Length: 207
Image (cartoon, rainbow, N blue to C red; front, top):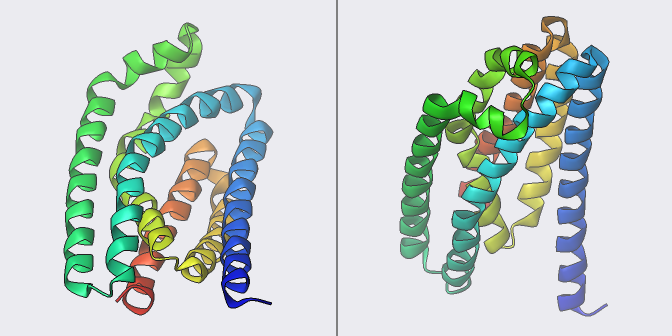
């Protein structure tokens, strides 16, 4: 098999495994929410829209990172590679803090964009804390994802998400007795694990 084709197949396989793990993790979250109650399922479905909006917002920076990192990694320009990573993380965390403040100030108002059911809004409010901390906690996972894709370091992405999924499933098992807060904590574990593991792997796969 041609080397270029073999490389493409390997990268595609790694990204496929990564995507399957993320889809599976999301499915587990929804299934466990449904097991708690129909109300919790409805609440989590709404709150997940906040997470989706956050990921779309940060993805713009992640796509920029993907392009720039590919350029500097290909040129073996480690100085500009490291500088670009520092700058992207600075602006991403700054952006995350702004979004966090928006969620703090207008979280309840944003809930009303998704439902006009006052009892549902009242029951969702205690779980807004997980949405408020998400913009800062999730940034590392989203940005590293773009950086590693740009560097075509797909094996690191695969290894990171497999490890994170195992930790997430363990957290779900251990924290489900705490109800929906436990479920959201487990989802946070997934994002933190991805961010931390990719940070650790950066020195090997990027520099």
